[in-house]
Image (cartoon, rainbow, N blue to C red; front, side, top):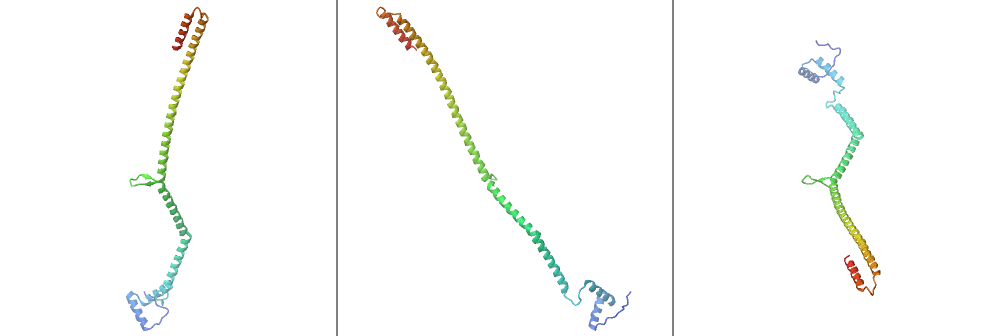
Length: 206
């Protein structure tokens, strides 16, 4: 049921024609449509004369500016330091990767090489050479000790033989002296000669 208006609004014929067409198009009475129009502009706070919604555009622009300002503030206070930390982290990772590639490299056969491997191989080779030299030196020392022991044994044998030879010579000499004292050079010349020959023979047999 239509509500009777308490007030009246006067407008020209052109406005009335537009108003009538709008009311007919929307299927509403002029009074109902007018009330809805008033409620709309009252609640939206829009200016009916602002046909291009300049005020709305302005408010939207201000809202966008506030959002952009907020984003820039967040970028300056939070995002920029975070990006700087990430950049520093990336540089550190690149440096570590470069150092790793210097120490460990892979050839076309997926074999690991590089400074570290070359160094380890060189040290291992030097250690093997040093070990071989030590083994060779130890063998020479062992041969020298064996030769020294053999020489000592020979010297000991020679000393014992010399000692025995001296003892035999002293025995021959003592026997000769005793026999010589008991003989007379004039009356027993033949026996003396035999004694000399016997002594020489014993010495030659030593």
